[in-house]
Length: 236
Image (cartoon, rainbow, N blue to C red):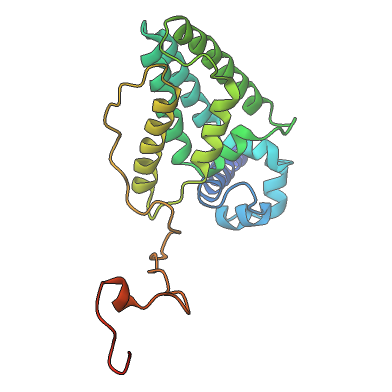
Protein backbone atom coordinates (compact mmCIF):
# COMPACT_ATOMS: atom_id res chain seq x y z
CA UNK A 1 0.00 0.00 0.00
CA UNK A 2 2.79 2.41 0.91
CA UNK A 3 4.66 1.58 -2.32
CA UNK A 4 1.65 2.66 -4.39
CA UNK A 5 1.22 6.08 -2.76
CA UNK A 6 3.86 8.02 -4.78
CA UNK A 7 2.40 6.65 -8.03
CA UNK A 8 -1.10 7.74 -6.97
CA UNK A 9 0.11 11.23 -6.11
CA UNK A 10 1.91 11.52 -9.44
CA UNK A 11 -1.21 10.42 -11.32
CA UNK A 12 -3.25 13.08 -9.51
CA UNK A 13 -0.63 15.70 -10.30
CA UNK A 14 -0.62 14.78 -13.99
CA UNK A 15 -4.41 14.87 -14.06
CA UNK A 16 -4.43 18.34 -12.50
CA UNK A 17 -1.83 19.54 -14.98
CA UNK A 18 -3.87 18.27 -17.91
CA UNK A 19 -7.05 19.93 -16.66
CA UNK A 20 -5.23 23.22 -16.12
CA UNK A 21 -3.81 23.20 -19.65
CA UNK A 22 -7.19 22.28 -21.18
CA UNK A 23 -8.87 25.11 -19.28
CA UNK A 24 -6.16 27.59 -20.22
CA UNK A 25 -6.35 26.69 -23.92
CA UNK A 26 -10.12 27.09 -23.96
CA UNK A 27 -10.08 30.44 -22.15
CA UNK A 28 -7.11 31.89 -24.04
CA UNK A 29 -8.72 30.88 -27.34
CA UNK A 30 -11.97 32.75 -26.67
CA UNK A 31 -10.94 35.56 -24.32
CA UNK A 32 -7.26 36.17 -25.05
CA UNK A 33 -4.39 36.29 -22.59
CA UNK A 34 -6.04 38.74 -20.19
CA UNK A 35 -7.94 35.93 -18.48
CA UNK A 36 -7.11 35.95 -14.72
CA UNK A 37 -5.20 32.96 -13.40
CA UNK A 38 -7.95 32.41 -10.83
CA UNK A 39 -10.44 31.95 -13.67
CA UNK A 40 -8.19 29.29 -15.19
CA UNK A 41 -8.05 27.52 -11.82
CA UNK A 42 -11.83 27.73 -11.45
CA UNK A 43 -12.43 26.30 -14.93
CA UNK A 44 -9.92 23.50 -14.26
CA UNK A 45 -11.51 22.65 -10.92
CA UNK A 46 -8.32 23.16 -8.91
CA UNK A 47 -7.28 25.62 -6.24
CA UNK A 48 -5.08 28.64 -7.01
CA UNK A 49 -2.27 27.08 -4.97
CA UNK A 50 -2.28 24.00 -7.21
CA UNK A 51 -2.25 26.17 -10.32
CA UNK A 52 0.69 28.30 -9.17
CA UNK A 53 2.59 25.23 -8.01
CA UNK A 54 2.43 23.81 -11.53
CA UNK A 55 2.75 27.14 -13.37
CA UNK A 56 4.34 29.90 -11.23
CA UNK A 57 3.54 32.64 -13.79
CA UNK A 58 1.02 33.18 -16.53
CA UNK A 59 3.87 33.29 -19.04
CA UNK A 60 4.93 29.73 -18.21
CA UNK A 61 1.31 28.61 -18.54
CA UNK A 62 0.90 30.35 -21.89
CA UNK A 63 4.08 28.83 -23.30
CA UNK A 64 3.01 25.33 -22.31
CA UNK A 65 -0.59 25.79 -23.46
CA UNK A 66 0.46 26.74 -26.99
CA UNK A 67 3.16 24.12 -27.52
CA UNK A 68 1.03 22.31 -30.13
CA UNK A 69 0.38 25.51 -32.10
CA UNK A 70 4.08 26.33 -32.11
CA UNK A 71 4.85 22.89 -33.52
CA UNK A 72 2.13 23.36 -36.15
CA UNK A 73 3.59 26.75 -37.09
CA UNK A 74 7.03 25.21 -37.54
CA UNK A 75 5.58 22.44 -39.72
CA UNK A 76 3.82 25.03 -41.92
CA UNK A 77 6.96 27.04 -42.63
CA UNK A 78 8.97 23.86 -43.21
CA UNK A 79 6.42 22.74 -45.80
CA UNK A 80 6.46 26.14 -47.49
CA UNK A 81 10.25 26.28 -47.63
CA UNK A 82 10.40 22.77 -49.10
CA UNK A 83 8.28 23.79 -52.10
CA UNK A 84 10.50 24.25 -55.20
CA UNK A 85 8.27 27.18 -56.22
CA UNK A 86 9.08 29.89 -53.64
CA UNK A 87 5.99 31.98 -54.40
CA UNK A 88 3.68 29.01 -54.00
CA UNK A 89 5.48 28.13 -50.77
CA UNK A 90 5.12 31.68 -49.44
CA UNK A 91 1.41 31.74 -50.30
CA UNK A 92 0.95 28.46 -48.43
CA UNK A 93 2.71 29.87 -45.36
CA UNK A 94 0.60 33.05 -45.32
CA UNK A 95 -2.68 31.17 -45.83
CA UNK A 96 -2.00 28.42 -43.28
CA UNK A 97 -0.54 30.69 -40.60
CA UNK A 98 -3.47 33.08 -40.88
CA UNK A 99 -5.87 30.15 -40.51
CA UNK A 100 -3.93 28.76 -37.54
CA UNK A 101 -4.11 32.12 -35.79
CA UNK A 102 -7.77 32.65 -36.74
CA UNK A 103 -8.70 29.52 -34.81
CA UNK A 104 -7.07 30.72 -31.60
CA UNK A 105 -7.02 34.37 -30.57
CA UNK A 106 -4.78 33.64 -27.60
CA UNK A 107 -2.07 32.08 -29.75
CA UNK A 108 -1.80 35.25 -31.83
CA UNK A 109 -1.35 37.33 -28.69
CA UNK A 110 1.30 34.93 -27.41
CA UNK A 111 3.09 34.80 -30.77
CA UNK A 112 3.26 38.59 -31.04
CA UNK A 113 4.21 39.16 -27.40
CA UNK A 114 7.72 39.85 -26.14
CA UNK A 115 7.64 38.32 -22.65
CA UNK A 116 11.19 37.13 -21.87
CA UNK A 117 9.81 34.27 -19.76
CA UNK A 118 8.17 32.67 -22.82
CA UNK A 119 11.39 31.37 -24.33
CA UNK A 120 9.70 28.60 -26.31
CA UNK A 121 7.27 31.06 -27.88
CA UNK A 122 10.09 33.49 -28.69
CA UNK A 123 12.13 30.67 -30.24
CA UNK A 124 9.16 29.56 -32.33
CA UNK A 125 8.54 33.11 -33.54
CA UNK A 126 12.22 33.58 -34.43
CA UNK A 127 12.28 30.28 -36.35
CA UNK A 128 9.15 31.25 -38.29
CA UNK A 129 10.37 34.73 -39.20
CA UNK A 130 13.82 33.53 -40.28
CA UNK A 131 12.30 30.83 -42.47
CA UNK A 132 9.86 33.29 -44.05
CA UNK A 133 12.74 35.72 -44.69
CA UNK A 134 14.64 33.06 -46.65
CA UNK A 135 11.51 32.05 -48.56
CA UNK A 136 10.64 35.67 -49.35
CA UNK A 137 14.14 36.32 -50.70
CA UNK A 138 13.82 33.33 -53.02
CA UNK A 139 10.45 34.60 -54.24
CA UNK A 140 11.92 38.06 -54.89
CA UNK A 141 14.81 36.60 -56.86
CA UNK A 142 12.29 34.64 -58.93
CA UNK A 143 10.48 37.90 -59.73
CA UNK A 144 7.27 36.72 -58.04
CA UNK A 145 7.27 38.78 -54.83
CA UNK A 146 7.37 42.55 -54.89
CA UNK A 147 10.81 43.89 -54.05
CA UNK A 148 9.69 46.12 -51.16
CA UNK A 149 8.19 43.29 -49.08
CA UNK A 150 9.66 43.19 -45.56
CA UNK A 151 9.18 40.83 -42.62
CA UNK A 152 7.21 43.45 -40.73
CA UNK A 153 4.52 42.97 -43.38
CA UNK A 154 3.93 39.44 -42.08
CA UNK A 155 3.54 40.81 -38.54
CA UNK A 156 1.06 43.40 -39.85
CA UNK A 157 -0.92 40.60 -41.48
CA UNK A 158 -1.15 38.68 -38.21
CA UNK A 159 -2.14 41.80 -36.28
CA UNK A 160 -4.88 42.61 -38.79
CA UNK A 161 -5.98 38.97 -38.95
CA UNK A 162 -6.41 39.01 -35.17
CA UNK A 163 -8.96 41.81 -35.57
CA UNK A 164 -11.36 39.64 -37.57
CA UNK A 165 -14.46 38.83 -35.52
CA UNK A 166 -17.10 36.47 -36.89
CA UNK A 167 -20.18 34.73 -35.52
CA UNK A 168 -18.52 31.30 -35.46
CA UNK A 169 -15.11 29.68 -35.76
CA UNK A 170 -16.01 28.44 -39.24
CA UNK A 171 -16.84 31.97 -40.41
CA UNK A 172 -13.74 33.28 -38.65
CA UNK A 173 -11.56 30.89 -40.65
CA UNK A 174 -13.46 31.67 -43.85
CA UNK A 175 -12.95 35.41 -43.38
CA UNK A 176 -9.29 34.83 -42.55
CA UNK A 177 -8.77 32.90 -45.79
CA UNK A 178 -10.24 35.74 -47.80
CA UNK A 179 -8.10 38.27 -45.95
CA UNK A 180 -4.99 36.16 -46.63
CA UNK A 181 -5.97 36.09 -50.30
CA UNK A 182 -6.19 39.88 -50.38
CA UNK A 183 -2.78 40.18 -48.72
CA UNK A 184 -1.22 37.75 -51.19
CA UNK A 185 -2.58 39.76 -54.14
CA UNK A 186 -0.99 42.87 -52.65
CA UNK A 187 2.40 41.16 -52.30
CA UNK A 188 2.53 39.65 -55.78
CA UNK A 189 4.98 41.35 -58.13
CA UNK A 190 2.70 40.86 -61.15
CA UNK A 191 -0.85 40.24 -59.86
CA UNK A 192 -2.71 37.57 -61.82
CA UNK A 193 -6.14 38.64 -60.55
CA UNK A 194 -7.06 35.11 -59.57
CA UNK A 195 -10.44 34.77 -57.81
CA UNK A 196 -10.40 35.34 -54.06
CA UNK A 197 -11.68 32.80 -51.52
CA UNK A 198 -15.43 33.33 -50.85
CA UNK A 199 -16.47 35.98 -48.35
CA UNK A 200 -17.71 34.90 -44.93
CA UNK A 201 -20.51 37.46 -44.71
CA UNK A 202 -20.60 40.16 -42.01
CA UNK A 203 -17.30 39.09 -40.45
CA UNK A 204 -16.87 42.43 -38.71
CA UNK A 205 -20.07 42.04 -36.70
CA UNK A 206 -19.57 41.11 -33.08
CA UNK A 207 -20.64 37.53 -32.23
CA UNK A 208 -24.33 37.37 -31.40
CA UNK A 209 -24.98 40.96 -32.45
CA UNK A 210 -26.91 41.34 -35.70
CA UNK A 211 -25.88 44.35 -37.69
CA UNK A 212 -28.41 47.20 -37.54
CA UNK A 213 -29.62 49.22 -40.47
CA UNK A 214 -28.20 52.75 -40.47
CA UNK A 215 -30.46 55.37 -38.95
CA UNK A 216 -31.85 58.16 -41.07
CA UNK A 217 -29.96 61.38 -40.52
CA UNK A 218 -32.11 63.97 -38.80
CA UNK A 219 -32.63 66.91 -41.05
CA UNK A 220 -31.42 64.95 -44.08
CA UNK A 221 -33.06 64.76 -47.49
CA UNK A 222 -36.65 63.60 -47.73
CA UNK A 223 -36.75 59.85 -48.61
CA UNK A 224 -39.48 60.46 -51.16
CA UNK A 225 -37.43 63.14 -52.85
CA UNK A 226 -34.45 60.77 -52.97
CA UNK A 227 -36.61 58.31 -54.91
CA UNK A 228 -37.66 60.98 -57.33
CA UNK A 229 -41.19 61.28 -55.89
CA UNK A 230 -43.10 64.52 -56.01
CA UNK A 231 -43.83 66.70 -52.97
CA UNK A 232 -45.90 65.06 -50.26
CA UNK A 233 -49.40 66.14 -49.21
CA UNK A 234 -49.52 69.73 -48.06
CA UNK A 235 -46.16 70.58 -49.61
CA UNK A 236 -45.76 73.20 -52.33
